[in-house]
Length: 271
Image (cartoon, rainbow, N blue to C red; front, side):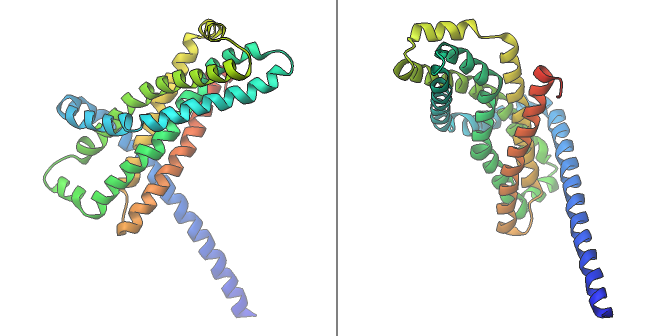
């Protein structure tokens, strides 16, 4: 009986110890990521010296992902238009589809779809690249040569994402609205002229501002979380794989959470 009680106490202790270690690890990672953002912002004063690396990262993050963005944006707009249009057509309100499309794409879906695509396309690559450099001690070698890893590796990636995510968000909005126009014309009986006239009348500067603000915040989130996971990678190839997986999942979660609070701030008063 005494041994059973001791085993039970030992099991409870191990459980709380494991939970505590995990919580401390998350707190440390959060603090490291926040400090990394501030350090990258400070190092951005050297951006003109690193313009070649920034342009290279813009090409990798933006240009190479345009095909995927195009497919997702086009069919995302078509799906949204189809589902809403079919339901609204039952009450003869299919004319509201263009208004719905431009508002939803501007406020939410343009920046959200772009962030999701670039998290998987670029964020994972950042985490894997920096993680490989970390476990192979290349980052330690940079520090020994008095080369700042944040200035050399993190800052160009963050700036390139801050430039490309808003640009791709605008591109996604345009293609998404065009996808909605195709469905509205072929399946809902709206002409292109009527569709785009209603779209033009429903564009609001505030909605465009909120969408671009979200895309800018999402760019910082994706790049900082991905770079932080890469810089903290350890235990060889297994650690690089874990860092890549965690960076993608964490970025998805933060994009959803922060996106909600930004929307609530401008449209719902945090309610």
